Length: 337
Image 1 (cartoon, rainbow, N blue to C red):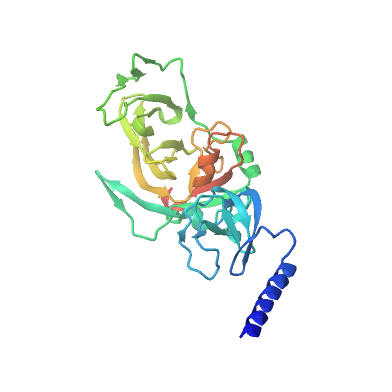
Image 2: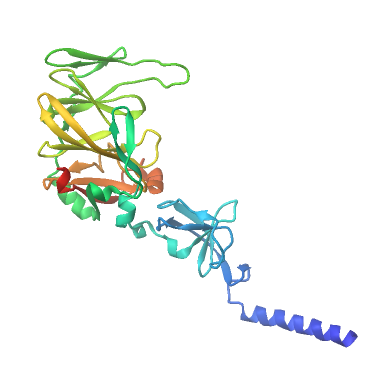
């Protein structure tokens, strides 16, 4: 028995020595999980795959904990193995290396660009959601384009919104809008303690259709007819097509999160009337609204050009105008024009 124990210990020590000899240089501080050998690193990478999964155990054969829901988000990496990055966190959180990369590696497939949380239209005071599984492809053609293509279109872009801050001013909390038939006055209102202050801001005039653009509570927008004073509600910031036949609105939803997009047909310019076609909350990307260096605009070709980012990239980049972003071209399907 004594000889057997000595023999077993000898084999164990020999195995340890053999393991140490085979261990690659620089991995003496590495941690191991089955076949995954982790080496400390320090770098920042983005989640480039919208279907990326979050692992609590770095094992490609294990069931991931859940979908990461971090498309476009930058993460600090503290270690890497053959298949995984370990996220710098107080939690055990691993992402597959194939789902990570540099900002330039983030790609927007058709599926990502067209996916929505819900889509439908208002019928009176009720929002009627379209059948599950429908995407923006029913109404729009959306493609990612290069920075160069965006800038080329911008040189001849259509920017009908003009802001005359000398003629339109707010005095003592009252915004006065001179119209042909009347003067519309919008007064800031201090609401109940549970609500925010309701403040009105003049954002400009859409001269081709004679409409003032006003921002109200929670950033919602509406139009005031410069001739009659009539109010027309819209979902968010409006972009009028060069031929004046339709309006696309793009903007953050009232609850935050990704962009809301809506399509309207302009039925008449005088008296002004529009028809609501569709509204949707986009799943994965956000347009840069009211950005001087990254404006949204219609081009001469009747397409809408949009500077945007993945939702989680936007949250890190929107305050910095010189940060890189992504660009889209949106075309309205012929049957809705």
